[in-house]
View: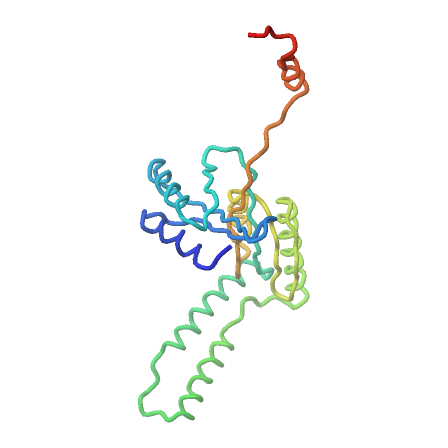
Length: 232
């Protein structure tokens, strides 16, 4: 756990042409020792050379390759999902693009600051008047929002996740699972409209082997009493 270790590790991987798919750094139960979990893809020989180079770094205690090892893998996802429905989300994206176009549009050059402010305000006001995602009655729109929230909650619970926050137009869900399972969940909730999402990256620990009673008894029988051996 020293400053500059992460930059040196990433520099070695960049020199080898690796693109880091996931990187997680956190402290451990040992004081002044951090654990770094890196996910990358490449040829076995090149990966092994990079591993040896990383082991040569003085601040690095050990480098373990978990490519073919049985692992417990987990990744945490936080996603803000719209509960307004796909139609609202699509029109919201279109409205955002129009707002961006207005901001990038060049006003006439002969305008003073006050006229420029009025020009921008009029354009924004026109866009606000044009933006009407649906002509539904308020009560019907409210029922649709609760229906969408119910569906998102059901999908989240199916993946053993939780709904952490609910607001007027969106909700925030939490999911801890394998990366492939998180990818599947993201595809399922994408039609509702994912406003924001954050993923921690992959964390992994190797599985421990199980020993049966028969193996333990066999190991006990293999123990030889040295007193019964001949002097030679």
